[in-house]
Length: 130
Image (cartoon, rainbow, N blue to C red; front, side):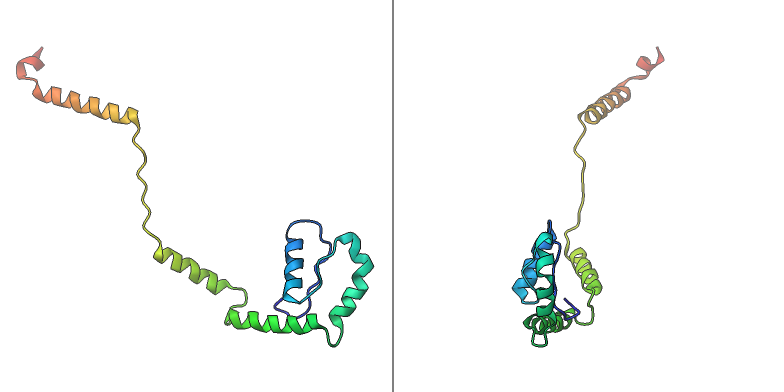
């Protein structure tokens, strides 16, 4: 699309080929996508329409290309914009903290340990000499 030439999505079988074929048709830069079995019968007509001197697909492709380049602002791959977006998200993100849930066994052992410590501290000298 950045190159400013018509786009022909061929060999449509699954997934994104259908999406991109329809999108190119909607943008006026190429034909509706054709299944691979139908393409061989229509390929010459499609290519002729794409390279014709007054091709609407070519005209629209040139306009779209310029529009994309203008929007890219010197960053056609989008690398700088992606990095800036990540930095902005990090700066705006709320601090994250995680307190693991209490383990009942650890809580019980801690309580027993405290009780034993208190009991030892409460013993008199007579109690410890035996």
